[in-house]
Image (cartoon, rainbow, N blue to C red; front, side, top):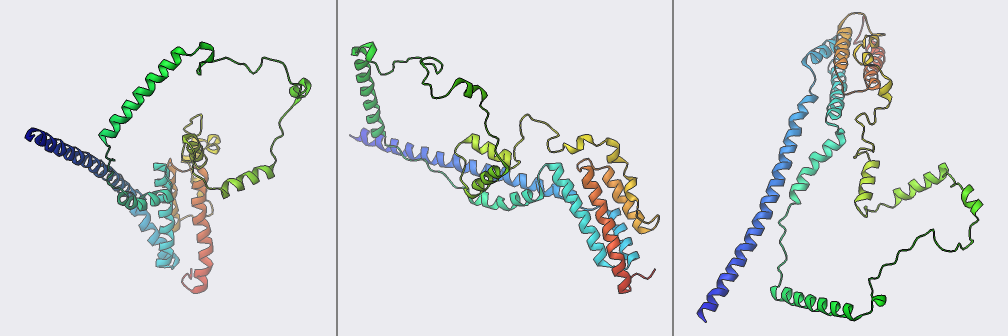
Length: 306
């Protein structure tokens, strides 16, 4: 009797040790996941130093602001545009948009706070043994019934049928079937379908629908895989157009702080492989429009007299 009590105590203790070990494994897994997320987040934060503006550009922007007489307002506008350009470059380098980067950083705390220890459900060993015996009895009865039942009446009898065999029903004429062509959807049909899909926000039912949704959102590559995906317009642009950008300096002063500032900007753009040619042109055009719009205002306010 004492031996039975000892065996019961040992078995209950072993069960407790097993459950504690399982909980410890889940906790370790959660801590490892949190550490990986923190490491990834810290890596992104270190990469954010790429968005800093070159000191030479900062000094040139100060010279431009002092020459125009705009002071800190002009300098701040120029540096803000340069930082926006650096953010676009960093996002293209990491293939992630700035909005997605900020969303990932903000959701890190939510992911860590959502970690919890998953406790496994306690199973009743007696119930499991009873289920095993029932399954075994059912299997024996099924095998006996199958052996005594005639072969023609067996449930799992397979018969091959073809769709192209048998007598035709005569519903469709052969000439109509051969000449039939599906009607192409109109623009209104596609628009109505898009509106219905936008109104009904339902989760994907399986993995295929999830991948289709991700492909539409641009989170997955479209097949066949191509490294230049989304850069079809750049296929017709020569390499020299990305490097030799001196023609973009037309319309700027021939000398002075503005010329020096724009030469530094164009030099940086010629060494940037992460932007398209149109993005580079738009970046230079922004400065051209800004200087043209700012000069009359500064002259009217008396800040710029020359």
